[in-house]
Image (tube, rainbow, N blue to C red; front, side, top):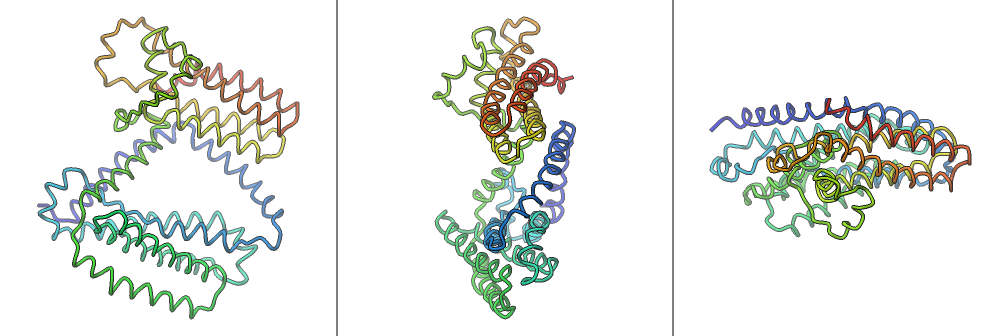
Length: 403
């Protein structure tokens, strides 16, 4: 049996070697440029939005809702694997350093999320809360301390066998976090915060510590949680590149088969048939497409009439093209596809046709939004942009990655 810390370092290193490869592909896909442009647009309208907000805006409750949620959701990355239930179970008593490292690792990552959230909301903080609360840095320190408390308690909660017990303790932490964030952002007396910290420390020392002594680790649950976190990352990466770990995730979704003939001529070739059904049934291609279309529509509604709406439309169409391009690799490891008599070029033609029709459908939806929210000139230009990009995106851009 390896030393616990050595095993933990090996698994973290293995995970990040894999994750960095996917992150590089995401970076090379043009997604970062899209995010950068959206940040520039959002930052401008954020300042406009702040000027529009009335002095009576309940900013305290916005901060309570956001940060109580971020504090309470404190999942632990343990990097455990399905085989561990057999091979590591006998060595559970020697894995204290392994799980301790997982807690500190999770705390570091989730503290980064708190920092980003606080930075994004700092203009709102400066306008409404700074005079009562004080230093933003001190707020961050206290949030990280309470996040650490949540992380350590969250790990001990995984020892419960039943889901109801885990949920009841999750709810208890949520209530405490709501009280803490309200006291913190409302500028309450520091004695009240100190009293709450004493209660939190007592809860950990005299209750959760005993759980660790009385209950063993539930390996099946830890593995389930870890696999769920991995799947979340894979789903994000799958929007930009092929992720083999997701290939076998299939849902029948027979209630959607009626739309197949609208998005592709499924009887034209085997790849026309396969790509149509894969879009609906596998890897959440259809789900990601629908979400991008809806988010694009919401952003267009929020933006004032003007050229920025056209930029956003183009950016989201590019994101949809990147997501659809991963369909090309979906059957690469299935040998049975090679048994079909496929004429050269049919695979490319099938993906082109599917992408072209889906991009046109997206354009039609956004044109409906622009017709109701924007000027006639913007609507006409959007028709040209949507039509031209649908053609270029489906004919050229969607095939760029495989080269």
